[in-house]
Image (cartoon, rainbow, N blue to C red; front, top):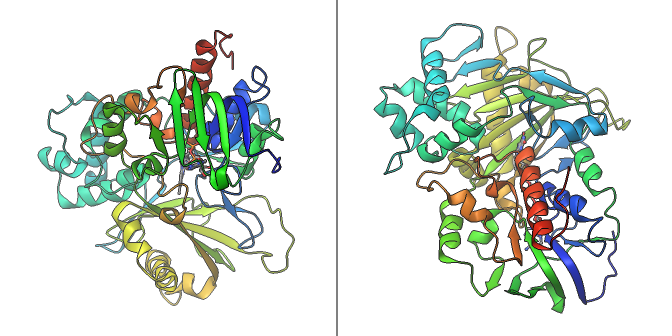
Amino acid sequence: MDASLPCTSYHSVVVVGAGVAGLYTAKLLQLQYPDLLVVEASHRIGGRIQQVEGLVPWPVELGPEFVHGGKSSLQGILRSMGVKTQEYAWPDRWYFGAERRLIDSSVEDPDLEATHALFAGVGDEEYPAQDLSAEEWMRSRGANDRMVAIADACYANDFGCSISQLGLREMITENRRWDSGETYLVLDRSLRSIVEHLAEDLHGSVRLSCPIHRIEHSAHGALLHGPEGVRIACQHVVVTVPVSLLQREQIVFAPALPEEKLAAIQRVKISNAVKVILAFSRPFWPAGFFDVVCTDSFIPEFWVTDYPATSTSADTQGLVAMVGFAAGLKAEEMSHMRASAVVQKALDQLDQVFGSGPQDRPATAAFVRAHIADWSREPYIRGAYTYPTKDAKVGDREALAEPIGLTVFFAGEATHPAINPCIQAALETGQRVAAQIQAASGGPQSKL
Ligand SMILES: Cc1cc2nc3c(=O)[nH]c(=O)nc-3n(C[C@H](O)[C@H](O)[C@H](O)COP(=O)(O)OP(=O)(O)OC[C@H]3O[C@@H](n4cnc5c(N)ncnc54)[C@H](O)[C@@H]3O)c2cc1C
């Protein structure tokens, strides 16, 4: 990366944000626009793809960890990288906190089946004129408290929010347009490799530690304002920052963005997510265990994370890891707790889920160290990922994606019209915006 770029420069294309959407846009446009520049606010590339080292013998993912769906558009990139994946059915166990009962997902449970049937059929619903939360919608379809608790821990948490925040309208769109498949894929290496692959030819074209705070734009181009008087002029600018930052007006646009886009920016929400990563001296879960969704519990989901060792440090040798994932209101609650209290409650929960007989505190007994990733604290992300938001309108995602003339373009997971907050969606928005810029300058359409 070139840190010595001049304070005022001109580029035909500037991409704001070096997450996967920004990096993919740059990769697709780089040949045609060799002077393209990516500006990134933080000191690293990858955005929400981030790892922590030194807990166990491999880097543990702080953000995304799974490829959602075996038919995802990410598959082409993974194949070209020679990545092998393993498929898991999700979820593989259930823990009912109120009943203190752990079951295999093959065990019949009428409330589980009824909840899955409701959510599988949400795409058949009519768009309501007045939006409902998923909880209100479930109750209107006769769901009981146990079903709501199941949906909160399973569907809402996976969507990155709580059941009261999840909106029916965007759930309908998501359900109708989801085309990636239902299995979870785990890669044979860190997701960092995807970031490295996207950035491999961008050396010298990425400027780090350069938060853009103002974009002046006209039909003729844009002037970007960065720290310490940095000015970057360009013909086309691609804004890929999380919608949470646009809501906080961390970038000021002059002239202001159109009313319709501003309203959509405020309606589409990102909630928080917290990952509690726990290193243990030995596994205390059943052989073959992958993941457990926990109703009426502090942390709604735990999974085992296991990659080929990349470190030989004596400090991590032989350790195993489990990750707790909480989103929405539960994550907000955790954000206000002391880290030691979060870890204690996580261990207590695992003791309850897996303890029995003389082994009644297996997690506590095997605990070595922990790391907590609280995404609300990331200054240039401020949350996890957009979720099907209550009171968002049909067409809001398209409004987020709408360019301003031929100068300002928008990409990033929030701008995907299928309400898809996954890595593949971020990549698809990068592909869309690259094609828009090529069309705007009369160039050939990307074949990638
Ligand atoms: C905890 C968690 C778990 C997840 N799990 C999964 C999963 O299992 N599978 C999956 O597919 N997806 C998952 N996701 C979602 C996935 O990470 C995102 O969809 C994807 O990484 C978004 O990429 P992006 O490029 O749109 O945004 P980002 O990665 O957020 O990139 C935006 C970039 O813009 C930069 N930026 C912000 N402000 C400025 C500024 N003013 N100037 C310059 N740069 C700026 C940011 O620093 C960032 O690098 C998860 C996300 C989180 C947080």
